Every structure is written in structure tokens, then in C-alpha cells.
Length: 217
Image (cartoon, rainbow, N blue to C red):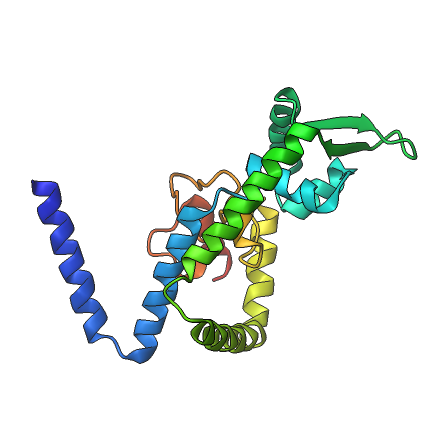
């Protein structure tokens, strides 16, 4: 009962806060909420389904190429790939052209599961925008592309600095495919399960975030 009352108070506070904001503030709130929802729906860049769908798209590729495409650390990729291999969903074979590399490919069962995962992904994308007409989707897309292009230009220096900082710590920037993407491969950052890696503006910075701020002073 107390939990419900607390939740209702939180909702009421959010509503009041939203109503007090101007149009720019409301846009930011909506974009932030959408980002949280998309991260919650995402299974992670290094998830088993993500690896299967990437291999379905690329066909046989080296393990190094697969790891780079996923945008995760080699150790994390090796662990998930090994699990998929043990499950009979993919194979790893020594490259015929370079024995130092390993080629990764789907088995028939792996292809079946990858196709199923891809179908689920397409259905989910359709559901996400089912409240909009085709005309509204086109309008929204144009507006988002316009804002995205402006932000990439306007905040280019900050993004370059930010991306370099998190590459140093094994993190990755915000411009990866969200469908395969939590902003942190393990979904955790010193106890912060919803870290978005915006250290400069984080209201509750972790150890690495505090170090980043101190280093920027």
C-alpha cells in the first residue's frame, strides 16, 4: 500500500514538473523517457540474439570482425560466442587464409533462431510506432533527422571528448544501433544499472564519473 502511495506521489510530481516546463523542457523530458523505454526493450549489443542476427546479415565473418561490429570488448564477445557454439547455434573454424584468425558462422539451427529473432525485431518496431499514421511517421522522421544532424554538428567537440573517455574505460558512445544496445555491455556501471555515460551531467556519478569530472577541472 505504501509503495502504491509512493508511486502515485512520484507520478503526481512528474506531472506537475512536466506542466511547469516550457516546450523545450517538455521535448527533453519526452526524449529522455523514450530513451529509457528503448534501453529497457534492448537486449544489449552483446546479447545472443544480437550476435545471431548480425551473423544472419553478414554470413561467415572472422571473430574479430564480429566483435568490432558488435562494439563490445573481445572478452565479452568470446564468452557469448562460446555459449552459442556449445548450444549448437554457430561454429568457429580456423581461417583457411590466416590461421591466426577464426571464422564464425551460423549452423542451420542458428539460422532458424536468427530469422525468428529478426522477425520479432521487425514486429516490435511496427508496434513501437503503431499509434502514428504513415504521414505522421514521415513527419516525425524528418524532424528527428533534422535535430540529430544539428546536435551532431553543434556538440561534435563534446561528443568526441566523451567518446574518447569511455573508450578508455571500455565503454562505448551513444551512436550504436539501439536494438543491440545497452550503453554498457554488462548493463552496469559501479551499481548504476541505467548509466547513459553522460558523466558531465549525471546527478549521481559513479567512481569513474567522478574521476572524469575531476580530470576535467
